[in-house]
Image (cartoon, rainbow, N blue to C red; front, side, top):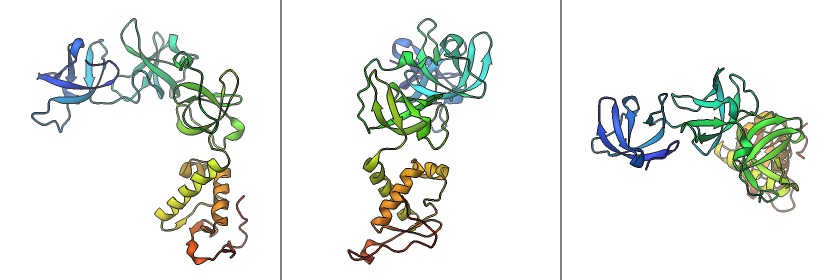
Length: 300
């Protein structure tokens, strides 16, 4: 049976002037309008991967377009219009925009800005709508993450202390402002780490792992990038935090620590600017690492 607000693989029942009718099981036949029929559909193909929702007249329809998020999921979506009677409309990747009713807004949303929402089927109307009242849709189970555990984050808001973030789309956590080198965007999905879980379940987060957990994987990432780039990179410990975060998804502090580790292991030399990959076989134990270019201090 077809599921509203989800991707479904449905069987083609018949063709008609408006499009193709698909078998929706207990929901009956569901129209896939002609403009959404794949150009590469071959004779004999009897199934299609579609998204099922309701059109502006509340009829069940299918589309081969796929939304940015489906029922039961969180997403950061852009506000593209506001209707004074019903609420805001969000761009979720379909030709029909997604309604965020006034009753489902924690605070008024602004045109052109992103808002993080949970997508659900409204039990009264049967329509798919968005809710910005996120805490209603979090996991009721206490967080069981480990200190230092890598987690997926969705930035949901800004507070005086930092950024609120959804942890694994299940719990709410906080990234402290003094531990973030770059501004983050509402609706941005990033990798992070659990720093601490306080009594009561408050989760403290970080964008970087701590100690060896942070440096060891990053050294390997830098070596791989060097090997893929002919043994040289323009990045070094004088590169800006923005450039480093974009390229390696880590803070400048973590990057400098990893460079220092690689330098001590004689895997790289500094070329001012940039770094050069070295072959360890060139040195015997006890020899000094190659000198850096003049005026370039060692990484710390």
